[in-house]
Amino acid sequence: MCLNYKAGSKEIVAGLTGADIDGASSWSDEIWQDYAAPVIRAGQGGAPELIVGTYGMVPRRIQQPDIRQSTMNARAETIASKPAYSRQWHTVQTCLLPTQWFYEPNYESGFAERWAIGMADDQPFCVAGIWKPWTEEDGSCTFSFAQITINADGHPLMNLFHKPGEEKRSLVIVPRSQYRHWLNIDSPQAARAILALYPAGLMKAWRATKGRRTRPMPVSLF
Image (cartoon, rainbow, N blue to C red; front, side, top):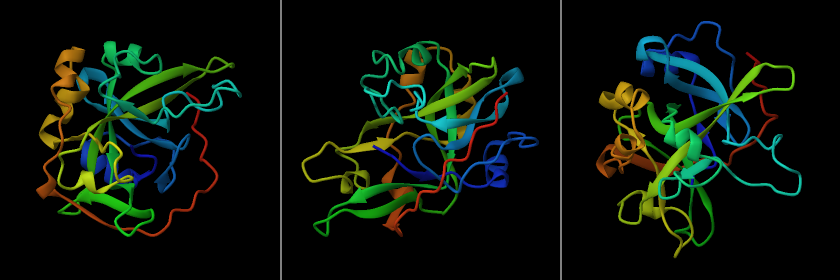
């Protein structure tokens, strides 16, 4: 389960995905729940299009005060049936989430230490997600998203994280050669075929400094 990651600058996002960044809203350096972040969806002609959405499929401002839930990570095993994600999954509202690295807790020392996970070559990458539009009270439109996660019990790198005895999970890192295919995929069955663990030899992990949350950057209303 991922709760925090680094998305990278507009220039990094443009270089990674080919999306136009002109006029895009800004986002924070590190992304936490309800923070604005870059989201790449299929635009005109299937080309990558940048929108800015909030992290978590159901923003906390929309949730009932007495029913709070985390919707940042959509489990591949239940994404088709969970109310928070099922409609977007069945209508294949897939997206790419530009990432420089993401954070997970490591317990090898006996207590939780913050570690970062990224590419062995230090290049940015994209993880698989789904996105959703929201109509605000004033009629404007905002967006939200969730990352898709899969079981990683057998992964040489991702099984190092989270508490001993807990199931190990991983984000789905999409190979660059499949970016456009993922954005324009035509069925949940075809989308599921993309949900695979990334080779551990192409990844690396390192101890990271403790994160500091700032006030969430608001998302511009469209």
